[in-house]
Image (cartoon, rainbow, N blue to C red):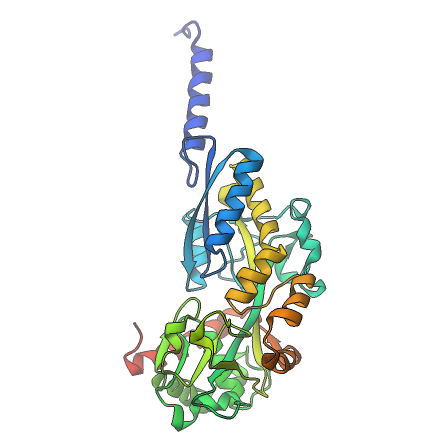
Length: 378
């Protein structure tokens, strides 16, 4: 049958209509072209109301676009990969050891986008050792930009623990049974501190075959059984209530909250493990050029002194990642009594490593079995 007159134009119109419909109703895009929503899956507290409001106002002024944020707090490292696969996140903030984890391969699996550093000029203001790290790179392109770094540290309540602890072994002191809190989901970190308490060398703690045995299993079982509270996501004041000891993401405690007034960071002689949280961009932004541009500007804004000092350092108690912000933090925001501990922590840092599959599975099994024995797995 001969094609009808004008059928080519009709077909083109339908194709254009389909493209427009797909664009308008893709995840995170509102029907109004002057409105954009960025969906963030980030650690609790990284994007404060002040940060959202000020950045949204800047975007409105610059582009006349109403920018909204949909923010979900991450808890488990698996959250990032799962949301990327389901196309439910535009921006994520995984720790540095996850990008090349064999379970995710975030820089090679097509779920994240390379970052255009020309659109993030503040990248050059990062601490030198945080720029273009191997875990953030793929084929000479950067996929992750550090936004904060800090510790899985040991903290103590000065009202209860009169002498600053000098070893992770304090968590197994019978005096503090039921009076400490540890993270619920980061099973490998609890393996690390158990191995350090047993005297294993810092390079061995990332390898199950080098630390395995009844002594480690008993240590982990006791750590889980004697915990008074488990916390998830970011540690909050309520997790510290009536506790003597705690594991924490903080490198100092914000003095703006009286809940932390009696708490200090300890310096275990065995060392303290260290994380770098990074911003990565989801593949969902690839088909949304304006949203992608704004996402780059948002990364750049997170590296400004305002965000690094007020939101990251002062409010959360974690470390800024830019040279000027860290210098200001140490000189003006860090309580004088915390300065000696801060300097010692830097000398004893143990950066998290990307685990082999066997090691990760073994660590997860050890922790889950320990939780199951206590009935505290939920």
